[in-house]
Image (tube, one colour):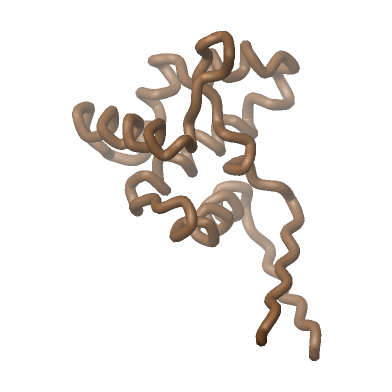
Length: 121
């Protein structure tokens, strides 16, 4: 069987969005949830070089100020924004760690290089 490679140059935001679109069906997320996750993950990757402690990083990431920034970036109203966040928690995409700190489930964080293998029977 042939191997095909597709190379695409993307900004970080575009890559995160494409990564989430690939997993959208498996994660059972809506378009608005995808928008929210994209913005939170962009913020996450902006904070990583500045904050080494994951607990502190996640406290800041899910702080009211950053939630407000994400909400404004997505254009979602207050009530709807918190409804979507609640759904992401119910879907175990955003979870609480053993210290009660909100964080992403590890599988949602994109990696720089993805390889897919399709096995056709």
